[in-house]
Image 1 (cartoon, rainbow, N blue to C red):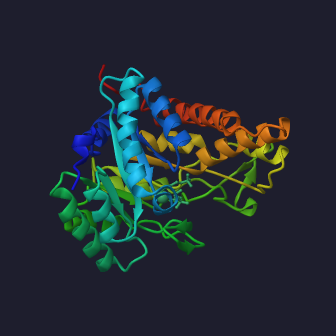
Image 2: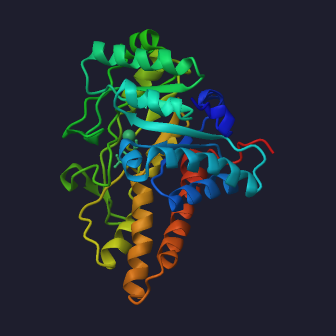
Length: 334
Ligand code: G3H
Ligand code: 13P
Ligand code: ZN
């Protein structure tokens, strides 16, 4: 049993309390490899932002969960080496699919876990979430639950339409489970294809597609029922069109990739939404930079020559999110 506190990590409790009071949200960035992790840590240190490092089931399979745990421990040391005296870094399991997966992560040093029972019948979701909370809280590990279903692929369960969170259920769910934060469904979804062109209208000024708005009435309903309780938004990539255009101009084939407009996320970050999940935008930034090097320098075969620019492009993206969207910059103690 490894306790996250011995690794220099923190749980989400204080972080979310401060985010709620300060009207900003904590970035939750997924990572699968060293370059993503380096970019996240550098961006967080240089903007003085707390940060949540997210590990999905796919990431655990791809990179090995033991290695990922040591990388997170290394992230704390790296942040200090970069000059950050008091880094606030959470190691979080994204979309935990069973009690066993959550327990395994808690036992190896994760400071926060999500148990995603959103696809289960309500009472089963309550029972599973409570079981994880009862175990996690013994070690001061925080737990994120979920109510409502996001469209797209979520934890290998595919749904082609949203089931928005029902505000009438949230008090019962949080009281019965004891979870520390709640992921809700208000129209975001996973991946880079969040809306079909038919669901959007064309902005006459830019010629770009504008998706339908998020269901802020549902968020308002949840906040009325659970005042001051930390809310989480999954599927919050904005799918920067500049990156999509670079990908497509350099041999890619991403058709009608559409994300959540940043204005909507800025508005959410000022509310009870304390954690905003972003993964796809980092994938796009990485791919765009790599494709550009491959197209411009076809003779290049040193991975550092394309992974380096990819890392720089991701760092730029993370900083932009922290400063211009989430507002979590300048929040660390000196
Ligand atoms: O929730 C989805 C995240 O973007 C993780 O994606 O399961 O492909 O690693 P992944
Ligand atoms: P995106 O696919 O919009 O980046 O969402 C990521 C996410 O919610 C991870 O849990
Ligand atoms: Zn998610």
